[in-house]
Image 1 (tube, helix red, strand yellow):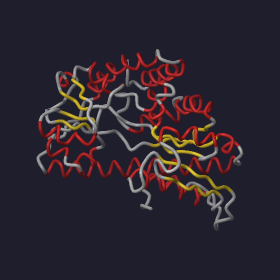
Image 2: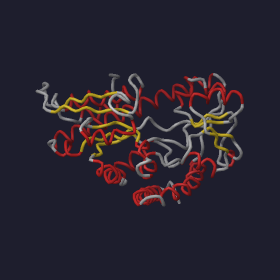
Image 3: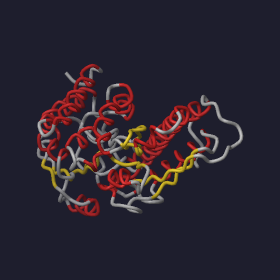
Image 4: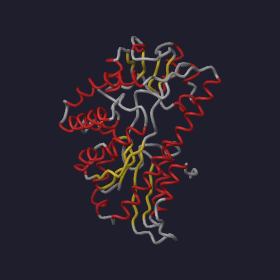
Length: 338
């Protein structure tokens, strides 16, 4: 496991360990929405290792790659049925069950930094909303992480919302495409496998693709030499949840240790991936790439446009309305939205 960064190490160091590893008392099986070997899966494995350490060996968690037991969209049912004990997954996968899942998982344009989303979840009412969403499926929300704020690939200079006018943007269907259209861009639905070629041939001018370091590794920035970093649009919420009955049966001390371990995982993932992004930025600059960083004012403009699309989602279910109300109240309170 990668050595913990300073932030995570401080958190880890603040927890009283139980000394020598004791006998295993609890064994759980979780399924990830990521494949084995994926960087995010490796960070998630780190959580299971830290849980074992913090509980003195009392809790052992087996983490399975995506699709091992069930399809990634079926993990809540598998947890309720006892086929799995928990999952680590992108909450947006369950938007088909209730649009509120999609809105809380990735309210396009809401976040300019992972810390904002995490504060909303941990201190701004998000965790309560998560439990209201997943408790009916027999799940309990343990905590949150994220791969971070995606960068934005672009062949054309983009320094403002106005610059999006008429730009052909690759984006998935749904909320994100609707927000780009509302901002004046022309969304094009393409699979990830076609983004590089489409960008190279001029089928698209820009793309919602991934974080900066991944964009750099895949050669996106060698074609789209005007990326926006940090990005302004997409930051996914990754939830860690487990069977509620089994969670409730755990001693409070074990519950606390599992949550403390999750905080270590969260900060390790975010900080490590940010370090990789910053290193990739320097490599890209040396290759003649021009980095564009939107001002807080332009980010707020995009967020305001996105709000109109959030409102439409909010009308689709009572829980979606609750998420919308809590989200906009938080953003307004923090001065991120008027």
